[in-house]
Amino acid sequence: MSVVAELFVSADDFVLADGLRAAPEMVLECELLVPIRNREVPYVWAEGGDHAAFVDAARDDPTVERIEQTAELQDGALYRICWSDNDLFRAIDGGDATILQAKGAADQWFLKVRSDSRASLRRFQEHCHERGIDFELERLVRLTEPKMGQYDVTPKQREAILTALELGYFDTPRTGTLEDVAAELEISNRAASERLRRGLTNLVTNTLSIGRPSNFDA
Image 1: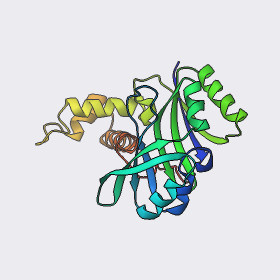
Image 2: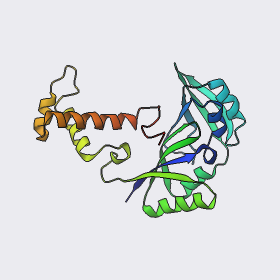
Image 3: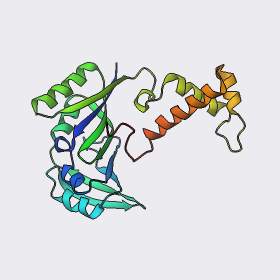
Image 4: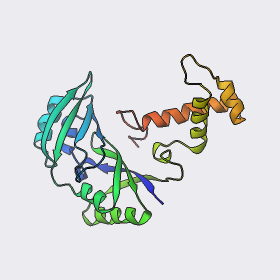
């Protein structure tokens, strides 16, 4: 069964440690693409911090061969990066694992890594151990519900969100009410509201947010 590992790893053991140290207020997030010819996440979103200092340091970073800015936003930018050889990238690839999410700030990265099985996850751990790469495992999630486990959305939250969608709760103008959702689920209005709020918060945090995950400072 596929599993998702959430872990923290030192920037020194992953990528862009020099760039992050030069811009400690910056938050980075890799933009993940469908892999083609084993190309490793070439795009990185950067939000906040000193972008000039980050780029200057990144150009001397041993994990970076080349960096260029490809887009600029109000408080951020998108960078295209050509990586040097990296042990953690090789560990993930060698363990038949896939990076689902990668966010970096200050001196560490938060990663979500999906493995096809516990055996492939063990291979990833062994590869890291052999190369002196330390990481802190935050939790493991078994993918018993399609896609939802990796987004921290529980089965009950998923049911509430889909019910609200089907009843028109998200339509403009709204054609379904919170009371309708609660009645369909046979729970109180308060419970329905809480499931929707928590489920949507987790879904947005794990799909759209560039900022730090809620447990980033743990």
